[in-house]
Structures are given as structure tokens and as C-alpha cells.
Amino acid sequence: MKREPPSMNHLQAATIFASQTYRLKTVPIRQPALCIVLSGTKMIHLPSGDTVTLQPKQAILLAQHTVWDITNQPDRDHSYQAVFVGFDATCLQDAARSSMHLTTQPIALLQKLDHASALLEATQRLLPKQTDHTSAHAKSTKTSTKISPEVFRHRQLEILLLIAEAGYHFPHTTQTDWLDAIRHLVQSAPHQDWQAANLAKSLNLSESSLRRRLQNHPLTLATIVREIRLEHALHLLQTTLMPIGEVAQACGWESHSQFSAAFQKRWGAAPSSVRAS
Image 1 (cartoon, rainbow, N blue to C red):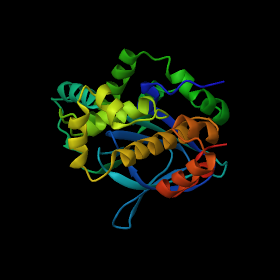
Image 2: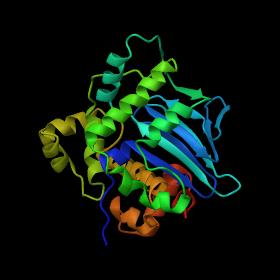
Image 3: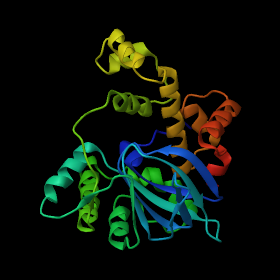
Image 4: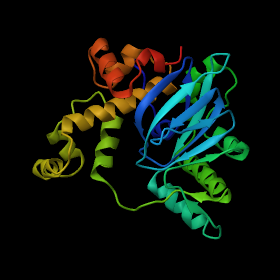
């Protein structure tokens, strides 16, 4: 049976699972994000060679447009779980207006929070309660889609206000990047054969205008689309129980082996290592 793609709610808030240790290389943070470890250990490897280590109930705030090497390590019970919440520009602007009375400092790269109980409670209102590893993992996508977009946004705002009360805020911008628009389109249907013509039409641009923009970008359109597909594949493997072959097809690969090779080359870990069993 064909599965429905994850909702936009699920793309912005999800629970990450792992049953074995793996390290991912150069993971891009596309939106300002909060991550809270529930079990196991997360390690953020800094360019300096230092490591930021998170244990259960500790959180980290990650700034947009940063890139990190990340290790997820299960505990002795072979369980790693962490909640991840991203925030778009509109949500950040709403939070900024609501927290003007607070004195906060911007998060330039990352910020660790040792005590995140209040944030954890707030994130659990976005996501299903984690009780049993297997059942919660299997149900995570389906359950989270029951929250309406309006309620979801309200709960995201609650999290941002708690972050502001802790003394921090994510910088925000009103500028829309055309690459972000492409990313949203490809994420909505990563299996589709995305070419300049159909992307331009979906973006209400002429094909020539899109090609001119691409000429000034260091990556080709094919490379951009491939990167978005591999990011989406990583998300699906970390947060759902979809079989690897099904993830490959959902992200535009007909060959399981070619997908696995591309995934390993991009992230430095095999799909079988990343996917929780």
C-alpha cells in the first residue's frame, strides 16, 4: 500500500529514532531549530575539534544556515530518541513581537540548554507522547498530522516564547530565498522529475529567468534537486518506519543500490545504519 507523504507539520516537528550509533557529515540546518534528547546521546562536532554533548533532557538551539557533523548514539537499551522542531520566518516574527519586553541574545551558531523540562513539555504537545519505542515510532507521523496547522503554529510560538524567557532568540529575516521555494516544491513531491520547465512554472517564473538565477549559483539544478531529495530521505529514515526501498522510491530513486550508494556518499552513513529497526 502506498503511504502518504509526511505532512508539513511532520517536516517541522518530528521524533528522531536510532538503534545503532552513526555519524552524519555536514548536516545543513535549513530552519532555526530546537532539538531535545530523550534517550541516548547526541554529539555536535565543532570545526575546532571540540564536541557539544547532549544527554537526556538537554536541548540545543541551532541557527539557520549552519552546517554540522552530528553523532547519534543509543543508550545501553539500544534506544536513541530526540525531538526536533523547526521554525519558519513567520513564526519567528510572531514570537519577536510577543517577546519584545524580554531581554534576549541572538543565537549565532548554537546554544546548549542544560535544563529543558519546560521546553520538553511544550514539544510533547506537538508530538505524540513517547512511551514505547516501536509503537511511538510507527505512529509518529500519523498522530502528529491530527494537529491542525493553526494549533500547531500556536504551539510552536509557545516554544519560542519559552526560549525567549530562557534569554535567547533566533534572528529572523523577511527575505524569501528562491532556493527555499525550490526546496519546498521538491520536498512536496521528491519523486517527481523536476526540471527547469516545471519548476519555473510552479514558481510563476519564466524558464529563462530561472536559468539566469541558476547560472549565478555554484550548483547545477540537478545537484540542488539531488541534495533536497537526500535531505528528505534522511528525514524519512530517521523519523518513520518506511522500508529503505520505499524511501528510495519516494525520493526519486528506482534502484535501491544506487540510492544507498548516494546516501552513503552524502551523509557518511549507510541507510541501514540510520534507520531504526
